Amino acid sequence: MDLGLKDKVIFVTGASGGIGRALAQRFAEEGARLALVGHTQTGPLDAWVRDQTWAERALVRGADVADPEAVESAVAACVERFGRIDTCIACAGIWPRDDRLLHELPVERLRRTVEVNLLGATWTARAFFAAIQRSGPRSDGHGANLIFIGSTAGRFGERGHADYAASKAGLVGLLRTLKNEIVQLDPRGRVNLIEPGWTVTHMARPALDEPGSVEQVVATMPLRQLGRASDVAATAAWLASPLAARHVSGQVVTVAGGMEGRKLWSDGDIDGQGIRAEARSD
Image 1 (cartoon, rainbow, N blue to C red):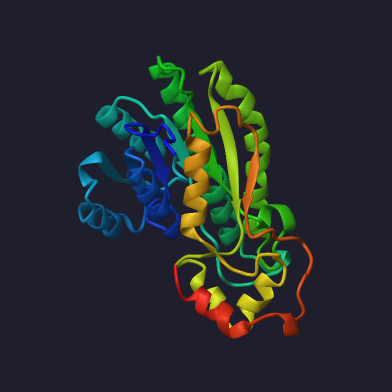
Image 2: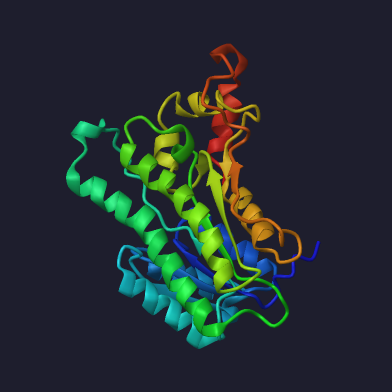
């Protein structure tokens, strides 16, 4: 199916992570041009991009999304290279691994999680909207597109990770507001949010390797399997499509195997060995 993404300019933060790289690969396969933003792993991201057949269609930049000026600089570099941005995906995020009750959370950790996950997404959207205002809508009617990468933690909560859950829940309020603001800049502009559940990435793998963790996670899912980064990327490509999803805006799309906030499977119903093999593959 032609998603109409060929030669579209896709700006992705958090591109050095598992989901970020899957986004880059999927949009590259659709023929898009890419501006990929990393932070602490920008060097490995750049090396990975240079090895791809689509490297000439990509720009790699480093930026801490918690710094609004750094985000604005990355957006400016993208516009200078490609002329505009068609889709912006705010994917950058952190998940501190240690379980801590709220009153035990170090202030520095709480601030940093919110600054990266929520404010970082806000600065990214802000810089993108400014770029839309400067470039104006496309002449073909294919509207500008903003996609946030959230988490099921923002819906169900996550014990021991109040900082992460709060930062991801805040994206919903941002979504509900910006879907109404983007159309003032581009009448066909859209904003949506993808809410992944537990997804096999390098960030999540240490937690998933803990004994019993995978079995506990999939016990809340009708589809007893972990998500892959490619599942999130496929959903993002569909949402970004000006052909397939042109009338979809303001939506939270959950990619989590039907996850619910309750346990659906008892230990005897779960093939722990088979599920754990799933967790070891991307």
